Length: 182
Ligand SMILES: [Zn+2]
Image (cartoon, rainbow, N blue to C red):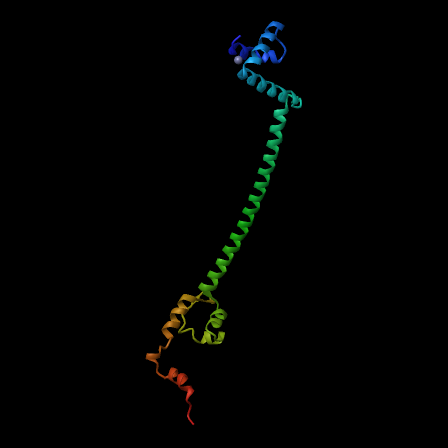
């Protein structure tokens, strides 16, 4: 008997399916051939391991049940993600509205002022503003007055007396206040 014959019949030998003469021939070969002996030992170990495994008898729909479970958990995760996304979207919408309102307020604040607001801005009384209507740039909204801040600022710049053009030496008075007369 040669090694390839043994190799071909080793599984049947291991399972005890061989007739006694073939069985004996293999046993003789194994005793004298370390290579086939090693192959036989290896196969025996594997066979024993397989036999030791708990006999799992998966139900016919085991795979489907597992997939359904997986799908359910994935769906749950997806639903949670969507919920979180919707919350985020709502939060963003609310913040955007807040921001737009803020911008509106800011624009309103910056662009158009009422008599009271321009009075406060110029640190003057509303009466003073009414007095200066022939000077101040204003918008007549059907007897309601509005002032554009940019126009008021422009007007302020034109009214501003710079030190070199000053009619009175205010700056010198202020800086010279340190050495007053004795
Ligand atoms: Zn051999």
